[in-house]
Length: 426
Image (cartoon, rainbow, N blue to C red; front, side, top):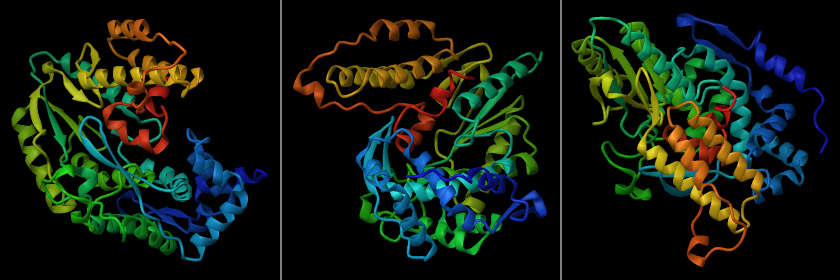
């Protein structure tokens, strides 16, 4: 396959959007006339590269890449003609740490989603508040933890003040996003009818219900009893983008209307700091009302107000002003994951290079915490022996592990990417 030669011109057009975007009321960015750019062969080729990362030797990726240029042309024609439809999802369940239903799609649909994401997301990100994290380049869980720790260090130096934190957790967020509201938000930001029609088709899945009734857990509701008008498929790249678009309304409400200074959000987890517990209670009530009336979401029973001296559990860490440690559940998942890595290496099912990559990523993450004893223990236990294992061990599978709030990236990228690898460079 010949690599396209005019990618630079395409990306200059994508980044500038001189005639494609302009600013209207409330500084909202309007995205115009980008459909042809998104589904140009140059952008589709870039999407193919992105979708292949970390999974290049999987059978579906190899099949598509065996005749990549023709397959991309066929996919482009399918989208442009209006005949494109997302196929049924591959559904499986994980416990990380609670039961979650992951929905995977065929490789060609990943390419479509990457093509949209590569053009649309860079235009949306500048409109987000500075302290929104998760699925935003340069703003992963490690960056969120560092920002929270910086704030704790700052407020802890204020004499005569006792500081508290409000932790907000939205109940079953991915399962409860309203399709009607999400499409309304997208229509305000995107002024391209062909693109909106495609996005609406992805959101309003006709063959697979994605939502849960209020207050229900995934294990309590069979697939045939789930809801069609709410929910997003966990594991999809566009679901991550939609999740940030949806909760950006909450961010703007908290910053512009309530005037909260120390507010940080990572996907559906929100931390607010204040030296006034009464103020925190008032904010909690107003945010809960906003979520119910404007976004049709609810806070769950994990929502709480506590002194910052107890430490704040956030993005897989427990954070104080003077130290950071991993949550116990995160530590256990690291040990379990590395145990699976060793077994796969012993059985000849994982090369040494991949083992080294995974182990180095974990150590890179831990170096940003006060966890030297854990690091020493991981080095001590990471003894690799080439050879067979018993039959019971061979049946156990390795699950790529990231901090809890990055679990969906495991299954989108299937590899150790994101903050854990970035941790070594930050």
